[in-house]
Image 1 (cartoon, rainbow, N blue to C red):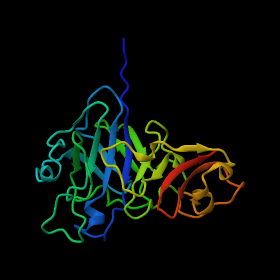
Image 2 (tube, rainbow, N blue to C red; image 1 turned 60 degrees about the vertical axis):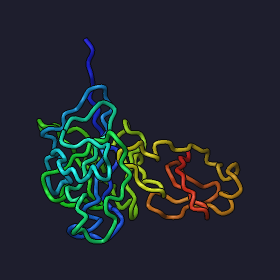
Image 3 (cartoon, rainbow, N blue to C red; image 1 turned 180 degrees about the horizontal axis):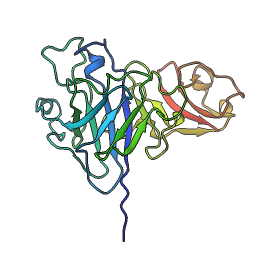
Image 4 (cartoon, rainbow, N blue to C red; image 1 turned 30 degrees about the vertical axis):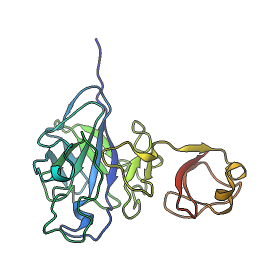
Length: 254
């Protein structure tokens, strides 16, 4: 007998969109949570619910067809997530444009085939905060997947930066702080493969072998944005590197 294992994973969380906060403001209506079905079976999201540990929301079908004016190829009016496909839990006010304040209306590039769903409330959770973890349960209230290490006593999550999402590095890896990175400078990736999924591994002596521009001008930061570059004294861990051209990439010092 062949046993099929369902692997539904939270792969990206946008809690701090660009713009001001408040009802119908960009930071409210542009929040989202990305799910990936890493299995060869369709997953029916009927009855699934998500919580930020402050408020619990039931996942429901997206029915507002105005979203098709911006994204004609997305899937709405259903809750079935196809194998190896993405779903986005969008704020129910995402398509509110006429009365929306603060600009940034429907700012994301969402590809065809993505399943758009929402929640039966005006916000995801109690409006996502920078330090909110998330837990997804199925229709039997069985734990499925998490973001933000809700069962660990640590300081994760925190702000990924204004307009940046948290992206899972290894989508099948554990929900640990070192398996999440802020989205890169050219933006988040809703409904797409995370750009942080490939992290370059370099030796602690990387400053001796990295190209001259990075060695002379570049700066290395920890995941909280603190500059920590010091030749020959880097501890093992994940960091990100920028140059004066704005180039950014993640490196793992081993």
